[in-house]
Length: 212
Image 1 (tube, rainbow, N blue to C red):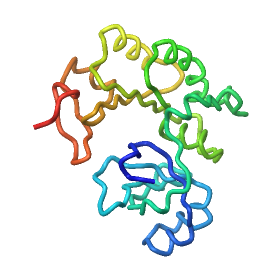
Image 2 (image 1 turned 60 degrees about the horizontal axis):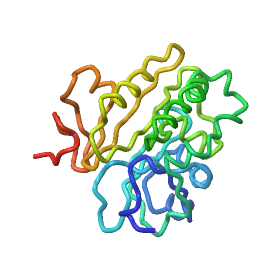
Image 3 (image 1 turned 180 degrees about the vertical axis):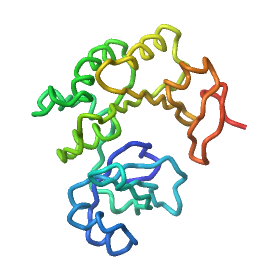
Image 4 (image 1 turned 135 degrees about the horizontal axis):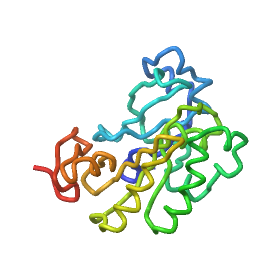
């Protein structure tokens, strides 16, 4: 596994959870048993000496921890796009009871029809990938759209319309070759957005251009 093939929001399973736990100062909830089943998420940061920037997550929003992972520790990778293609929300036993999953079931056909490179991230992605159900009635639905070129006006309108869901908050992050921004912010400002890059956040009028 090379660090260059991994992207922010990819989910990683550890090859040696006890070894990782011993080698890092981790919070109490991030036990070796937990890490043996719960994936880590790739963070947007620069790799250091072949190590991958990752985030650990537990069962609550307060349980988050940043760390660095040796590439040799990666046993398995699941990407947001893989989760979209697998469509496991269709068979989730609580799909009807969880607004985020119900919203995903409603809008997935529209995303597929738009022929965009999209995927599922956040708590919904974590749950679908790991079968560890961390969702609740107030969970957001976080989606990722990867766009190597600026969105057409028609596509931007189609995606923006998906944000207005009556039952769940839907956030769409758009990843460009130079970083990622929140579609909701782009809709609100009409242009200038906060672009998350590997070297930190910057304000950008054109997220598809290199930042100064």
